[in-house]
Length: 70
Image 1 (cartoon, rainbow, N blue to C red):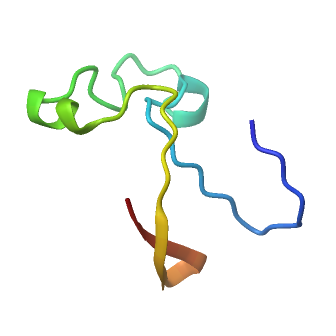
Image 2 (tube, helix red, strand yellow):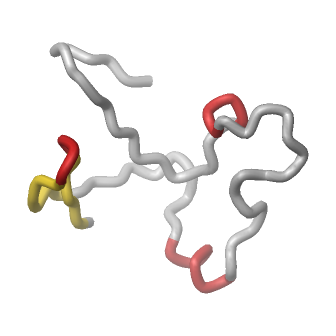
């Protein structure tokens, strides 16, 4: 859950798991919008669900976004 204390025009959420179907825009399609499994090399780099992730903002990017690094 996110609690906002100031007004904002956009919100970026960094997550470590696949989004729920309601948030993917997949509708009623039978084909998953993301692969069910990841290649073994990629899976080794992903943190476990629920792991705290801290990043450092290093620069601004177009569209009100930010560039970050772990």
